[in-house]
Amino acid sequence: MSAPLTHRIIVDRPRKLVIVEAYTVLSPEDSSWVGEELRAAIQTFGDEIGQHVTLYDVSGVPAVPTATIDMMMESFDHPAVRALWARKVAFVVTNATGRMQGKRLQKIRPDFGIFAKRDAAIAWLMEP
Image 1 (cartoon, rainbow, N blue to C red):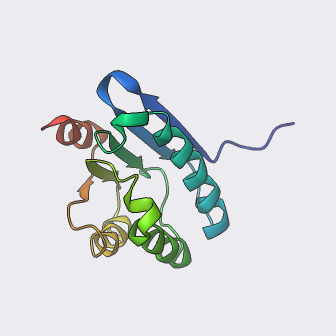
Image 2 (cartoon, one colour):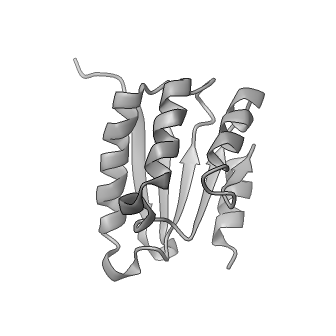
């Protein structure tokens, strides 16, 4: 019997779009493993790193632990991660707690978009 799927990373190369879907609450340790998978996916863009956009869809997760948000803030602010930054980043959240957590992440990167609907987030990401 296999473990339940906790997340999925999709690379849409023609649109230079990386999608991270979370299906369950991720601990800081779990989130760091997802970050490593994401880093590997981004590196497949080669010379186009930085021209890509990233969508984090956490719409199915009620809230992320504070310790996980703290770790994400440290990660987004780390110089090695900054070299892999997407041109644009959007979060899809469906509740007030998720929006508040997204606003915390905006302290590190004010240009993060926070959306209630995935279609709206992708449309924004595809804008120049």
